[in-house]
Amino acid sequence: RFLLTGTPVENSLDDLRSLFEVLMPGYIEPVPAGTRGDDRVWLDERLRAKTAPYILRRTKQAVAPELPAKIEQVLYCELSPRQSALYRDVQEQSERALLDLEASGASENSLRLATLTQLLRLRQVCCDPRLLPGQADAAAASVNPIDSAKLDAFRELLSESVDDGHRLLVFSQFTSLLALLRAELEAQEISFCYLDGSMTPRARQAEVDRFNTSADIPVFLISLKAGGTGLNRSEEHTSELQSHHD
Image (cartoon, rainbow, N blue to C red; front, side, top):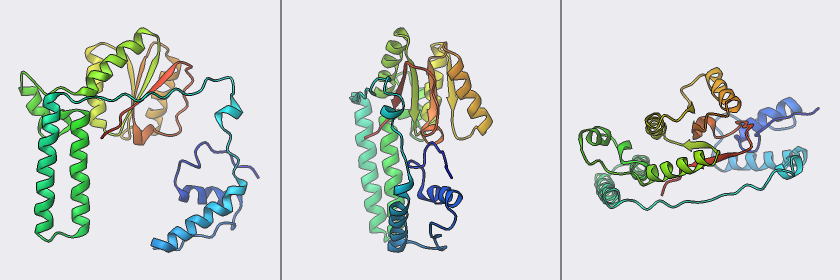
């Protein structure tokens, strides 16, 4: 038997178990319900060891050696003075809130959840201050909204790429950020495709097909969680722009 799949290594180990149950029924031990901690780690390590001899992973070099090597370029965005000041304010507020929560005797789980929430707020400031709760309305009402260093960098990259005939895949974890980029593209009258987790599988595939068959669409906005794995792109001159956050 042969089983062909695109992303078994990038998906979860439970997916790998289900694939091997089709390929070699009974070969992999099932995971008892409620298994956690060291017992789960032991079963996962055993799964890796037992499946490794049967997995043939073909690399790009083996499949299509004529394609050029991937070029990865990291661009650092220096926050504007007002954006940097907002970042420091949010950071100080977050630290005070966490200290107050700890002093009140909150549980470890509550502290962990609050910490993740505060880190999310800092990431939002780095992406675009309008992502912070309440900041979008404030920016709309202000004649001098806080600039986003990443949006400025996106505008520059977009202009260069379109002028050079390249096409962009723009990934972000925040669909709210993608919404801001959609507005930016619409304001510049630049055609684009869009994909996020709220769309049906059929609608997602339609957007992928539209991008692959329409060379005059230079930008594809993609939610990282919904489209980060398994998309096929037929275009030769396609660049990927991913948003990373400090």
